[in-house]
Image (cartoon, rainbow over all chains, first blue to last red; front, side, top):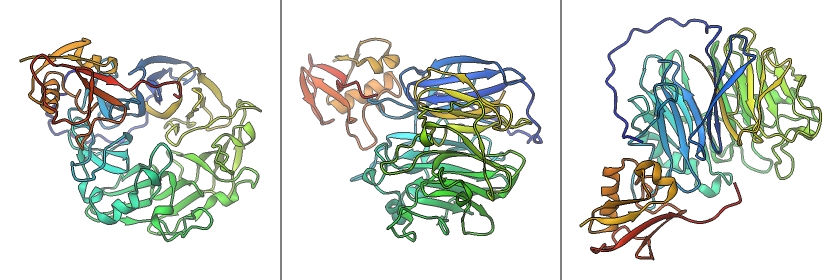
Length: 392
Length: 89
């Protein structure tokens, strides 16, 4: 694990967006016990597994930089060792460890990063900039392609935000997590992020000022919805085809927000009552802002967080959440008590769109038909934490 | 004077060996020297608040040590281990 060296980059000309090639399909799978890269053929039918990378290490997120098509970042920890970030520029043939991974500043009663939970490459015009969300909740930024990381101190040191970020006791047993870091493709200074728990937040000046965006979001019965701390967004996504539209899977339902509006609308109320609108992942169509997919989970009593009745199904909307359709062809019909985590459900950019999800029982499922039919493309993996798609 | 340091198995990818040498008058200095020789190793056992991570243990001559200011004498032996547990995940 040689010390990583920062590379000097010359300025580059921004290339126009282009549709993905028919080959070079890549799935990035992060698990409780390591990471795998799955390379797909042009038809997305056959997948070749490359892994494990970091066998035994907890990999919360594995991302390829879409701006250069070669920088891979992996967030890593183990049950015993502290958290770090590994970086590869040769598709995982070799990895270099960050000499300065995300860490809070040293202070009396200060916090320690337990895990880096979420990675987001920044705006296309900021080629080496990345953001990271951690547990305990903090926001971090790298300006050298993920080699070194610094606190986003304007947020992490803000007394109000520190209160909303809470302590370990305020989160789930795995700890509270800052996630869903979103960059407006029209403006690198316009960002969103979400906290579980602690609400959804927005800045329009690159992080100098932040404000909560929780109007319309519900909280667990008996709690005050005006209190930001009580809000538990599980996954927030911005429509690639319409940056003024966001969708959210929350602890308390599925929502949509159309900007410049500030009030979330609970579109999950249109889901079948026997299914409900609890879940973790939220997946959006790359070219149609009316189409989205969710994977409902059981949120009753002690929160089993498993497929409803052991009968997994994707639900799709093609009209912005006015109605939902069950998609389960190819999925097990019974006794499949799957849990799918918030980062483990994703889409590619092909036509038709490919959908992918990984279960905590180590199965990876794919659909080449926008969810109409499904097949298992890998099994017997460790507990899957995150699945991302990429073109190489 | 070089101090013998026994390395826990999860940290051996850094050192490439189960036993290495480092120098320092205190445990903190010794770990800083270790990090110079094997970059990144320190942060994986010591957090940003200068605390030994929850499930790591450091022994000096078989005595558990929790304070980085603990003094090290020539001939001491430092042993870095991960807490023994298992079965849950």
